[in-house]
Length: 97
Image (cartoon, rainbow, N blue to C red; front, top):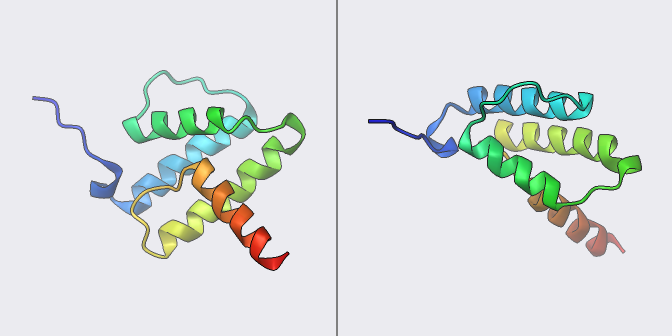
């Protein structure tokens, strides 16, 4: 029987390493593999739904990657979705305005 492990059940360091690999592939614009973990597919769909402008895409992904790294280092068990990161960022901007 096939067991699917949720990101919360995985080693955070392994999840972070796989997340970093995924973001690097996105930044290069070349995803050459055809096998993804369920949480990676969820993140890819979320990233696609955020409809980032081409001009800001690379920088936004880099900032998102750093935010996920900090999130995992602080005890997070799964990567934030890009939409969650953007929402948090816009709320911080509104608070300071």
